[in-house]
Length: 437
Image (cartoon, rainbow, N blue to C red):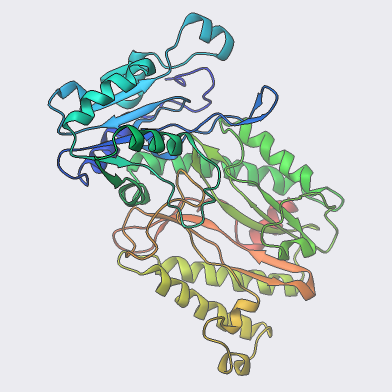
């Protein structure tokens, strides 16, 4: 079955995902309450130009509706059974189809979301007034990601102001804690979509391993990846890619990608394809010449050992802060063996900034899903079904060498996490063989 609108590249997703996600949300709602979710704005750049539309991940997670000017209402205890789940959509027409492309009609909206009651947006205020008369509490949605920049006002923000102004004496509750909870544990269909994103990323890796050689520009590599991603139903990169050769690999968020790849350097490449709005997040490091030096390979293999050891620690019940400390201990040993820190450095270290942080200064793992840095609790124990990156690194500015290795893994009920990137080359010798084939 093809995409449901003319501007979606991905195949239609089984609506069971969204039905199950809404049921998970409802299970945590207070009795007699309703929840409202808004789509993102279309962002204007200048004149009549806009950025490509990116749907708000929460309404997407609960409905699958991937278009602007959409509202989802969930009211499990509504007296009118038809109003327990409602979608409000921008009214479509033949004229809109000609100018903007096809939008969801009511039948397509049901096929996408599993929601039977669909109204055009012009009915929203009237119907909301009726629903508010019987609702005891209202869940409103705010961006509570720990690293979020919330300076810009969103469509959701404007709605919250409007809602509280019109209905000042209702009880208001937060959707974000529930969304962080249910989004962090992935549905089997979501795992399949994330696997699809990782499989597209793998095709990109295979393409660039044949392409990289001394003299290519970092942006040439970026272009090869984008070509492969677009050819495989991806909208492109899940986040701004890092293609950092030589000393640039020691700049953690280097995104200029404008330098020449020199013989003798190692390129750190942190990128991932998106698929159906799901992110993949990969890092690989390869020698420009096709062959690592002994020192480069020693550092590379040290990082790989830490990555493999860290992966084993991602099990249900583990605490993320304790996990990161344990990974630090793995890294500490490797840095001593590489001669980068000494046992004396460790003995006199500041516990708040351990000695290993000089060469490995970032966290090892983050949640990944509909967002590259996905939502989820940092204080609750890990659960099966959560998906994390595993990405240790060693950065040695004085040697012009930075190595980071990263895969995306699914926490299992028992045993080692399942690696969604298990088929993407990572062993140093394998990479050398592929580059010299």
